[in-house]
Image (cartoon, rainbow, N blue to C red):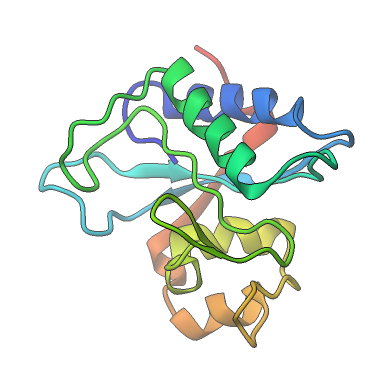
Length: 164
């Protein structure tokens, strides 16, 4: 997700870079404009998207997270220390196959993914039948159970986001 600067272009740039980490063409969702969750007052709305890729055989959850954090820095992310502050880019690792982790630096699947429409709506677009590790319901079923469809609005395809 992103909510500062040209968020659509930044997300498109991130998707293009991440696509190079996959031996096959990744699947990208549309961009979704989403309401704020636990953000400071006055924060701009977020654009969020999901990108599904087939990692290279040597990829671990930890190496993928390291790559995502490096890409955030490359795209201009700075960390203010304020929780959920506006940001140029925020790349989260939601799941990696059936891998699970519970370390100080990585929790897989993402611990709140199943509760957040801004994660589930883009994910539902590309993988509605996915069952996140530890869940019993598919992504589509989790999204329907939230009943928060009004909190997310599909805009444009991620891989075709206009650059200005």
